[in-house]
Length: 350
Ligand code: ADP
Ligand code: MG
Image (cartoon, rainbow, N blue to C red; front, top):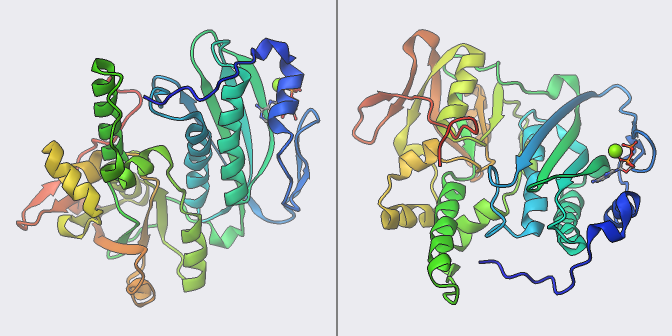
C-alpha cells in the first residue's frame, strides 16, 4: 500500500558496519548536560548528580509489532521512540537519553534505514532526548528495533503503580480506542489493496485514528502539566495494552479495587463513528484496544479542584477496597467485573 519511494537502493554491504553507524547517527546532537559522552566510545557516559534514574526498554519485531506494508519506516522510527518515552513519562519522570539497536536483513537498502533514522531523529529532537548509542547487527529475516530510554526525576516526584488508595479518583489523559481502530482501518485497506493494487485508499475520513496508530505521541506534556497544577498522582501507568489491563495493573500493585464508569470514558467522535461502521462496541475498543499511549493515573480527592477544569484530564472512576473488586459501571448502571483482555504479545491472537 505504501509505495516504495526509494528510487535508489544502496546495499548496506557497501558501507560496512562502522560506515553505516556513522552515516545513520551523524545528525544526532547532544543537548543534555547529563550526557557526558554519547555515541562513539565503548559506552556512553552519563552524569545525573543526585537525581533518580529510570530506565525502560522495548523490543519491536517485524510481523509481530508492526507491518511494513502500511507502516512507513519513518513512522516506525518515531513510534519506537514514543513507546519507550511513554514508559518514562508514566513514572512522572523526564526523558533525557535513548539508545537504539537494530537488527536488519539485507533486503533493506541504506535508504530504508535512512528513513527509519529520520523518524528517530525527529522524535528525539521534538521530545528533547539525546541518542547516546545502540547496536547494529544483521538479521536473517525481518527488522527488529530495540529502544532503551533513560529518564530522570527527583526521588519525591516519581510515581509508581503501587500508590493508589481507596477513594482516589481514576483519571485518564486524552481519548481512547483510536489506535486500535486505526489499525483495523489499515488492515482492511491492506486486504482491499491485495485484491486491487490500483485502488488507492481514501483515508481522510479516518485521519485521526490512523495517525493514532502510525504516529502516536507520548504524553510528555502531562508530566509538565501535573507539575504546574501541583498534582502528584498516587499511582500511574501508560496505556499500551488497553484500559482494562492497565486498571488491573494499578489495582493489583496498589491492592485496591475500582469502579470504572462506562459513560465517562473519553472517546473521539471519529472513534464513535468508526465503531458504528465496523459494528463494534466503543467501550470494548477502549477497554481492550491498545497502543493509545495515554496515561492512566489515580489522584487523591483533595486534588480534584486542581484538575477538574482541565480538558486533558478526565475522571473515569474511583478506587475502592480491594475486597470489592474491579467493575465497569455500565450506562444501564449494572456492574460487570473487569477482566484481563488487554493486548498480550504472548497470546496467539491475530
Ligand atoms: P561495540 O563494538 O563496542 O559494540 P559498535 O561499533 O557497535 O561498538 O558501536 C560504536 C558506537 O556506535 C557506540 O557508541 C554505539 O553505542 C553506537 N551505535 C552502534 N549502533 C548504533 C545504532 N544503531 N544507533 C545508534 N548508535 C549506535
Ligand atoms: Mg556494538
